[in-house]
Length: 386
Image 1 (tube, helix red, strand yellow):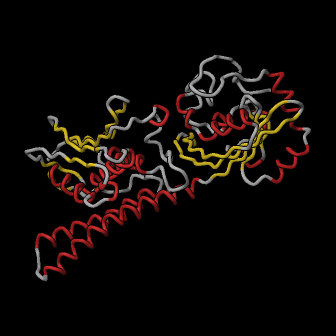
Image 2 (tube, helix red, strand yellow; image 1 turned 90 degrees about the horizontal axis):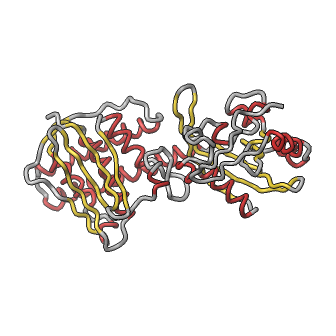
């Protein structure tokens, strides 16, 4: 029996132990598992993807569904691989010892569940957001993971069940983001229309504001369609010349009366001389709303969130600051699709969409810095072409 190329033991890891079983140990593990009636039964009846791992997190058995996932017919050629290596996680080969040892692995739900099951000898559940390579493209997958420890022949093994819920996660976070943003727009539209009703007169300025909100609502539907089609580059921006201060005014209006702003001070600083530039204000607004919302949610009551701008020779930067430091293991994945520290489905699209629309659609730069001393600063930098 032949095993994969991973055999070198290098004691370097950012999370899980790097050691692997020897070829002889792997052969012994495979023999033990292949003669176990429980495992044999699970291979036939397990719903979804099923694999058995040894205590070094290496695959020693897997069902047909798991083989079909990667288009592999011969199981022995993958025995000895770790799950991330098998599914071709983009981070699996960043360290010499592969899956489980890179800085990104510290936030991987699959590795966390495996390690917890091994140490506690109790079943563990988690969610795993992973970017894999498929046909020279990067594809986002989202799995529900369940790891059950079992002892066979005096050794510990892990029964790992994976359920692909990528479609459910995408639908949930799209709906969450969509209804949140539409609710903000509808609330603003209702407020403007109420002013008409109470004044009883035709106000051209207010009507212009209503038109702008309606236009943003139409664009919101278009942006959601883009998100729904796996972020395909089909969204066409509606460019217009706008001033920096008008964008900041819209942002302030969006958060006026926001529940979080009742206990947190949102300080929006506008430049004395507002610069105009060519962009799609609806997209810029969406990105900034996400930045501010995330900052508010990360800030304790009584704290402050600051919004300000930096004008360069041919660029304008919108910046959002809060005092909360983002841990390194989370910072590494902050712009990854489906990554979130929140429970349940429907999260993990906000920062990803910020990066996508800011860079892929508007051609700008979305980045951030974070430290315990300086807090966290998110930036959207756009070229000043007007």
